[in-house]
Image (cartoon, rainbow, N blue to C red; front, side, top):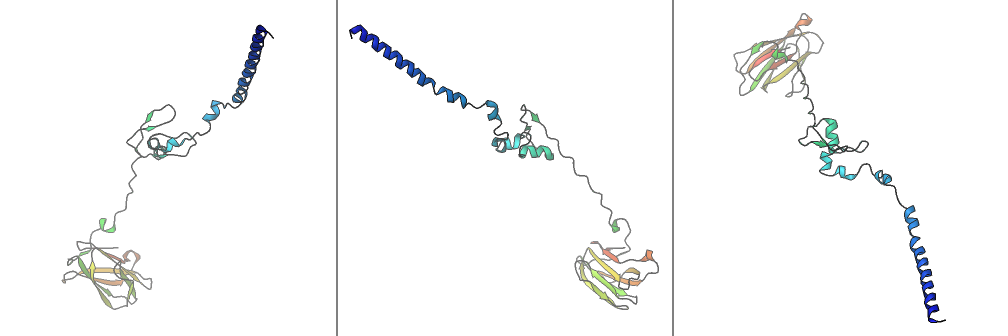
Length: 222
């Protein structure tokens, strides 16, 4: 082989090697193209990203529909007033929150002493009063100073004094034979003392049994 033949042989060998190399270089491109993931699929991986539950997004941005509510979404749905505008995800804009309507006030019926005149009055001593109960019926009567004594019984014809009751105080009285009871409070000359006569009532309109003494000593009955 002469000098020119050697050069031609080497040139052909180089061309074959380059051609084989280009084949090797092109091979990896095939699996790369097959493994590509459409962009639309990535968008659907997590429709509720965690950024919505981190500050400041948690309190300012409403989550997309179908996601677990964050603080901003709960505020909008419950009507809680916020000082900061809430941001929605669809085309960012501010939405002022509507204050919740004030609670409707419930009208309370007036207490008996607010719709009637006192039937007696005494002068409490250092905020304390004493009540003398006198049973003029033939039936035992149960009585109680609410919050201060337990339920007790007073036999017919007997009397009892409840001493040192703090005002305001309520005293209840009930005949044990289920008869009607007429309660008659009487102011006495003794300071801080109220006498209460317990008689038989003749009709249902006269039936009573709850005595209230206010802080100022006014006495109400119903």
